[in-house]
Image (cartoon, rainbow, N blue to C red; front, side, top):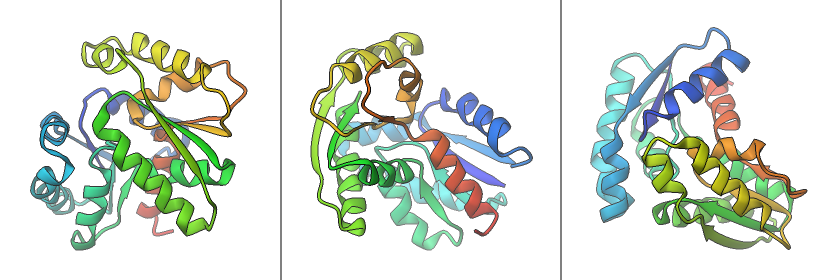
Length: 212
């Protein structure tokens, strides 16, 4: 069984659908705690380290063979806490970051909340260092997108993100920092590759469950 740590219930059907498409038979256990993101935005990701450790302990106690954190703001906190979890703990955006580095050096990161920018930039820089590839990062917050998502208007959020992506110039690849931005990937018209995290993150976690 794979446990997924979400900070929005909107991610549950997304990952259920991806499981049904790509990983039939994989058992999922969704753990949703919206307050983790709210507090991390107010006080910084480190403020929720204790709560994240508690969630991981609960997931393992309930039989999880791996845990996937789908929130990019607290993904690094979950990974760090995973050292004591006894099972693999992955962040959903790491495969995306590695793919971005492999695609090109000029990387634009789009985000809808400020708290995601720092962790995402650090992750991409880490993957660039690991690959021995220099990168030039630029970041942009998409105005109004998070407010639309939080209000339940995922369509409006995706539209705003897609417009922002299509406005990007002089880039080799565009990274959508949060899983909630993934629907915009299919609305963009830009020739620049646009990457999102859910599908690749779930694939990595499924492999961890299988012991690969």
